[in-house]
Amino acid sequence: MGEHTEQAARHAAAARKHPSKQTVETIGKRLVEIIVYDVRCQIGGTLSLDDLAETEVGDWTMPSFRAACAYAAAQGWLIVQDDAVTLTTAGLRAA
Image (cartoon, rainbow, N blue to C red):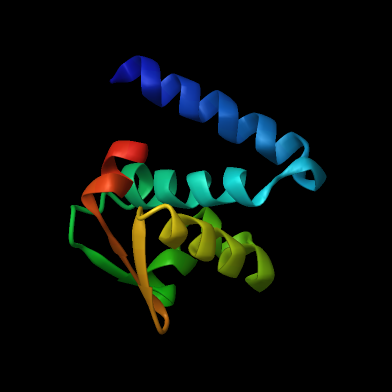
């Protein structure tokens, strides 16, 4: 698991260095990583926008956040309802 965490940290650092090159896929994956590793959400756990504002997500623009949510939901990683996201089993595996 340590190897995966190091890889995620390198990926996140690279994404911050080149924000204009971020794709919807990249930010969708990053959102799930933040929910799993930074917030330590469990499968079925629900987070509100207020919960996520305390993380790196709080620095994102709303269009980027909405795009990340839409991508993660399309992949089955998150369930998005109103201003809340719920982590799925697939989301935990994807992180």
